[in-house]
Length: 326
Image (cartoon, rainbow, N blue to C red; front, side):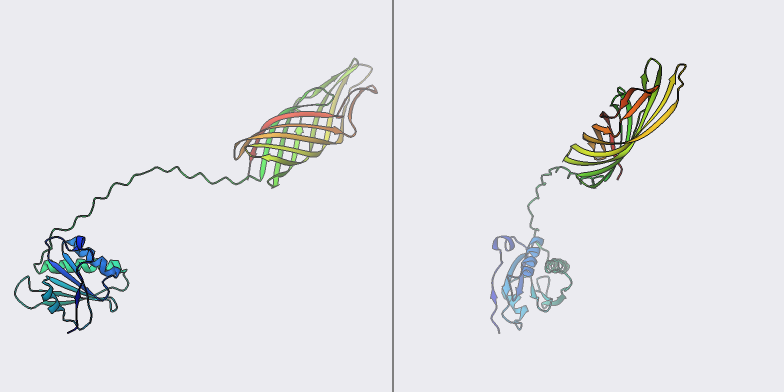
C-alpha cells in the first residue's frame, strides 16, 4: 500500500480548532489555492479540517478515513477536475459512502471550492453529521466616507466667431459725435482675428456759420486685423484696419444763398487697441480706442468758404459687449 503522509491543517489555529466533526482533505498539492480556499470554507462552516498529501492515486481512501478518525474525507484531483467524497459510518451502522463530484471547468478555482464546500456541508447534514458552531468573522468596520470634490468641468471650446456691439464717441473736427458700432470677428487662430465692422452716428453733428448751417452724418465700414499679446481672463488686442467714410450733409442757408444736400466717400486707415474682460466663456465686456486719418479729409463749405473739416486725424472710443457664437 502506498504511503500517505498526514500533514495536519495548513493553519492549525484557524482550521483545526473547535469541537466540530473532523474533515480530511486529501490532495497531491496541499499548497494549491483551490485546496486552501476549500479548507477555509469548511472551517467557516464549523468543521475541523486537516489537509493531507496523497502519495498515490491507489491509496484506499476509506482506510485512510478510518485511520484519521474523521467523519468524512474529500480527495481532490485538480488535474481531472474531480473531487471524491467519502463519508464514514458516524451517522449509523454500515459501510463508508463514496460519492464523486465533478468540478465545473468554466468556473474560477475559488468559486469551485466554495460550491464544493457547500455541497459537502449539505450532504453531511443530510446524513446527520452536523457541523459545530460556525467560525465567526471579524466585524467589518464601517469605512470612512470622504466626500471628494467634484472634478472640474472640462474647459469650454474657444469660440471662433464673435459678434460685438458697442456705443462710443468719435471726434475729428466736428466735435464729439455719438457713434454706434457693430462688428463680426473671426479667429482663424487663437491669437489672431479678422473683423468686418460698421459705425454710424445716430445723431447728426451741427456745423454753424453766420450765413448757414449744416447737419453732418457719418457712416463708416471696413476691416480690421488684430493680434492678441494677452489672452486670458483679461484679453488685450492691437490692430490695423482700412475703411471707407461716407459723410452726408444737409445745409440750410438764408437768402441769397440756398441750402443743398451733398455726400462724399473717402478712404481712411486706423490703428486700434483695446481690452476685454471675459465675463463667461461666451460673453466679454470690451473697451476699444482708435485713431486714424482720412485721405483726403472731409470739408464743409458755405458759399465757397471752408468752415469745418473732419478726418485728419480722427479718434474715438467705445464700450460694449462681445458674444461668442460658435
